[in-house]
Length: 181
Image (cartoon, rainbow, N blue to C red):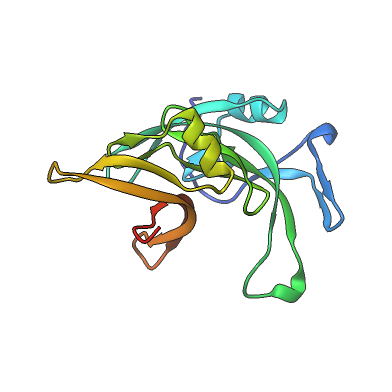
């Protein structure tokens, strides 16, 4: 029988003890067998349960596709609608950054790991600029507008968001020009 990768109902996979995620708020001992509409195959589950990364192709509803690489990671979620409940501890799939398109590291402003686009418009950030952005410093460069004109852009990483249809808001960290700086 051929295994299909369609999402039906929420399934969980028990983790080996060495991959349990223990915190003062509790211990996560399993992970969801699906992520982003993709149901992990038995081979992917085995690799994830061994602490390895997996690669698969995610096809979106609009027909576009993206190759995803990721691994399991211990996480915490604080529900905004029930702050008295405290953090929920879980193990979840984490998409790894594509170093050609994204940069990641510890952001000095928050002390947390962030992932952001390695480019802004037609400008690709150098390793020195990525280091400066992670240090919460301003970075300046000459940029090209959509109409082909050049302008000076100076900015730094900032929390941002956009509405992604259906009223869903996506929060992210990204370069934001500060034309008054």
